[in-house]
Image (spheres, one colour):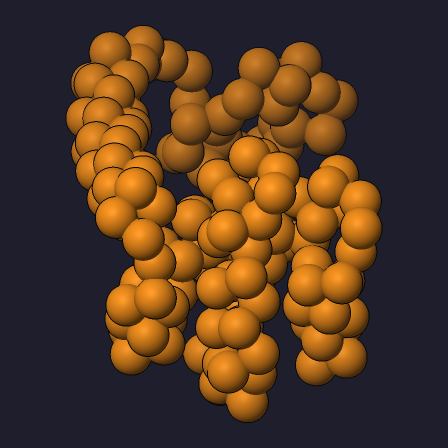
Length: 150
């Protein structure tokens, strides 16, 4: 995709740290959300861009690039291993710390989400169709008064 190529080239070539950071953020979202068949043709370019960004001069770019590398592990494990093989020990330590923190945050969100579900108050208001109705439905003039579902 042309826009992905632009993000990759801008990440590698921009002299402005803020621009590189935004490109790395975008690349991270792409790796998390785009279908693999769209990413596969550019996997080598992704690998190269992430490898250079992990050692960027700007700390925020390096941090975001490590997040990209974690996503690359999921999408293209062999490409991620290739990048990781070239990293120094402190960078690998940062990467593993971030992987551990991301895993903990993910499990905490899951636990907190299930607790919220358990504590959610149950409304006794029912719509004319038997399902729950929102407060807006109860005050709306469009609620059926005959008891039929439209």
